[in-house]
Length: 104
Image 1: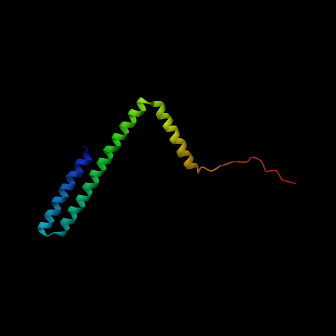
Image 2 (image 1 turned 120 degrees about the horizontal axis):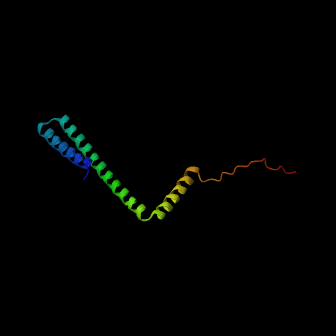
Image 3 (image 1 turned 90 degrees about the vertical axis):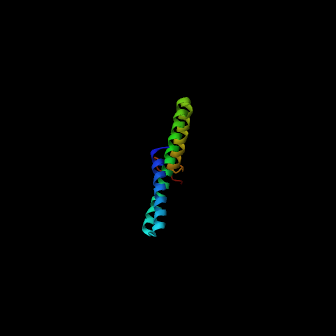
């Protein structure tokens, strides 16, 4: 668990408590603030989970590159070729340096 996951879990719990307190007191404003804290806590927890997953994937990728550097270079070259082809539009771009011949 990283810092964002812990803070998100705590914020979600505090929001839930605030909602319950608002319901007990009949204070709609407190309930809305509690709901906002709940949503923010859930979002922060989800961000923490995504960040943790990304770090794990990067670690896996580093291991792949260290153990199979030539395969990693091949994959990178292939992906570079594909991205370049997609960016360029993929159409034929022939440039003629002289005027075409005229037919008689």
